[in-house]
Length: 152
Length: 119
Image (cartoon, rainbow over all chains, first blue to last red):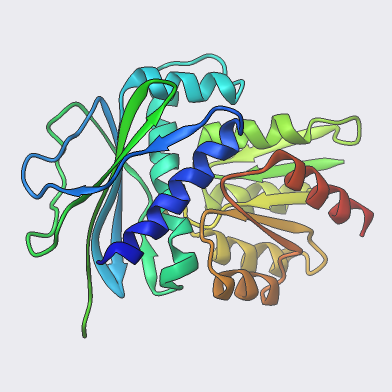
């Protein structure tokens, strides 16, 4: 992964939040690398990556942000199941959109949703963990990109 | 007009239903899996199907094959996060009538649906 690859995910984040409501601006802070203690928030959608790359893409956010998104989508009632569904769908959208750049062999799994800080997922130990901080309506979320491109 | 919405996300299914709400649609069914979609389509032959690709169990492209097998004239609009041209071309070759990328833009969805039912 390099800066150009991370830009693909940043573009996807911007596209996703613009689609919710264009006049509510999303702020994407400079990405950083954090290999230990991944910054998981209340809800995390995880997409396993295989094929030409392996690893995972995770979208993690607190309930408040996800509830706000659901309100913009006119979703009712808002409950834990719907919030989990949404966080998985956001992770799916951001990962799937990356195929625009990485191509069809960038295979994505269906979402796995985890709640709380103890996320049980076997992240690859041999890849860097890029964190993209996202601020939307004064709430913070992170997109974690933990991918190693296969050289085989 | 009968509409079948297939997506493993209930949030997405309901958003599509809200976006497409109109007098033309008299009946809406939803399916969260490819298997359920094939079963429902087989029984009711919906006029339009919106179909996700990445789903647990049977994926959307396999589901598309089965729907087209039941009815080669089926009108299927793929709505997927997979934003690569190869997948879109493959879906069209396999019988899809259109391909939209997520995140869903309601205006684009309405326009695609309109074109589909006018076809």
